[in-house]
Image (cartoon, rainbow, N blue to C red; front, side):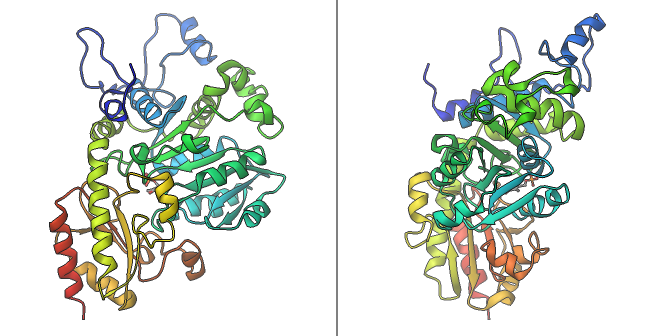
Length: 427
Ligand SMILES: *Cc1c(COP(=O)(O)O)cnc(C)c1O
């Protein structure tokens, strides 16, 4: 039966059998019991699949990961404790000391720190390119030791749109995968695999959970990247893993499952960034309405962007849904049903006006959050991105007076009235 995305949101990943619970059960158990130690031995050898310890696998998490996998159109997926862990695992699974990563400069501040600084301390080099760099600049970023390309479909908070096809073909020309953080559009608005991305990550903390209830992340593999064709670059996937009795992931699990199996059996085993089953349950509740919520986020974001666009106290508005936005053309290609509910804008009154504006809001709440049901607002230069220098801020597309307004799913007119009165209150 051909299934549409909305049905997968509600029913994907878990189909109860006869007389089984309709909700995904929460397996609140660290461990599983076995009748013989031989049976458990086969699980540890990866000769048989099954559950033994929740740090490695848990049925609740697996059901929710399977839903996200179906939504993205992938072949394998896993949940992580956070979006940060998802992006770290997605990269570190194939990149190590002495390797190099090419990344878009328009990415989430935490991911920028991860790649530029923390992974740098692990001996992993990186080069950042603007998402609107020329083909020559993109080409020049690659080195012989480049192992992955990373970008965000719609950048948080800069709202630049990644030209996925262009970045994918550059990555593939150099024999490496493109990893795309698809947090802002979610698969409801964009499915990066359809445009050539190889691996997708999510901060499920955002729209997927959608209610500000649980921090989490996810990694999905398209199964399209041929690791064996580039075996010299990815020996950890294509040669024996002595920490798992010499298993060769690509041979034993195939192109569709090698990457996620390795990330689970090595990285989750050693670094342990598991999502709690309770959080996975909450995430699943959010996913059940994702296809219903996203259009309202888009409707509110578009209406807000249009209102701000013509306001005399607003210096600029960034929203790819606006016809004069520099990313509009790419948004029409990759995000024909809208990009997200997040609108970034600045003030003719500068940084001080941004602070004053936020104090006058009643419906929108000041929060270090984005992309959930309740409208919230943040001043990145003063909060999430305050560790960045002015040059880094500008490179990431973040002006010091920029406010990030995340339109929730409340009534459109109430949101605009709230912003209008706060702008009127500015001196
Ligand atoms: C929030 C966010 C992250 C980090 O996710 P956490 O769940 O907060 O760890 C990564 N990428 C993007 C695009 C985000 O918005």
